[in-house]
Amino acid sequence: MPDWWVLCYDDNNGVVYYLNSSLQWTTNPSPVIQYPLGDISQISVANDRRPSGFYTYYFGVDLNVNGAIDIPLFYDQVRVQFH
Image 1 (tube, rainbow, N blue to C red):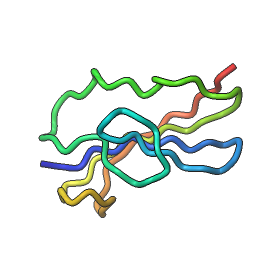
Image 2 (image 1 turned 90 degrees about the horizontal axis):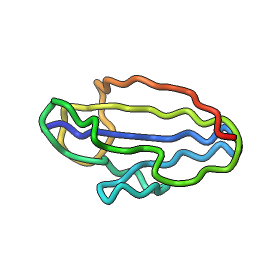
Image 3 (image 1 turned 135 degrees about the vertical axis):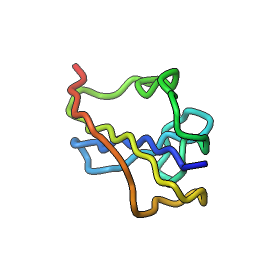
């Protein structure tokens, strides 16, 4: 089972936040879930109110189930602006 990662880079202050298994944002690196590859579209990443500004969200999977970000890491990203 792979580690699934959801990260948010706050362009406003340069901080990286990790979505943890409780679906809370934290600065401590933690996978959101350890689960076989498949659909996890039910996870909401915008579950809090962010100050106005730009944020880059990263969605990634690594195949080593150890709670650490490993290579190879397969990911995609999207940059959004909150008003």
